[in-house]
Length: 362
Length: 90
Image (cartoon, each protein chain N blue to C red):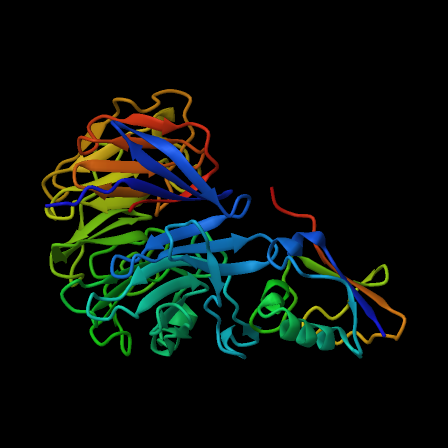
């Protein structure tokens, strides 16, 4: 049974904005960090701590936490590459963007993970007061020759999945490199890209160089993984050993960034399509949400309540979330939509928000 | 002693930040001193490798510093140093 979540937390170009369930609707509640881009937020289910990743235009990447549900915030040192670390020979590494945030397992309440551009996975073992680069991934032999930027200048880690059954079992998604898996808490890594397709590479079936825009799992059946990839939609039923292409050949569910999976039914997933990489706007000027109930064999397109003409919105990778029958997504043009029936119809929560980078029910 | 001035934008994060004079031979010396008095402030100005952030400007008098990587521009005792934000964003 899903506990009803009553707050929506948005990371936007102009701050962290919250909405709260208000009777049958949702009302604007608060804004923090006004004017500062918030790339991502997270609420730690183990401690209740709120986290915000800030992308200052001038002052770099910052990390803040709140122990009073956003009433006050405190800054902690954000992840940093060790002195002298190089992206490639002669080019030193510095964190450009905080792009993924995950809590460790329930048995390790002090552990947190952050993924960054360029391609660094950082781990905290003291509840975020310090972070260390996971060197085994940074030194993976594939990194220097086969990882590259996708949408950002350098390769970036935007997805971190911690297996709810085993805190040592991790997956990450890198644009562009692909999916990597660790069974030992990040000490060693296996490449998990078999079955993916990278149409932009000389060899589309290359072992590394894939672009999973977002990697997610079904929390109650973690062997099921889904990804909205640059080159389609892929699902794995065996923990990433093999990916199946479940792109909708005849419909719009092809290119996009976000994907969400039902927390109990691993066959049910949602995507929000966009026109492919050269254009990046809503398909045919109209927003739709596509849902599969059969593991991607077929897709239904839902449009009720969404703009169907002259629409340019797309949905970034972290800007779609689901809880029970309720879904919400925020768009690049500051629209926030919500559905209470598994995406079949939608209501507008706001048309007047900044560009939305992330949307999360808490 | 060189005098150090700041963009008012930094007072959002460090409300007590004020101009001050310091015995410093280089810009790098100033930043080391800054972090002692205002912990974390240098993180706002330089990245983890010590390079000036892309959208931060430091002037000595009316001239931009030349060494944005090592911050080794030499200071004279009467210099005024201005730590500013570049005009960017939207």
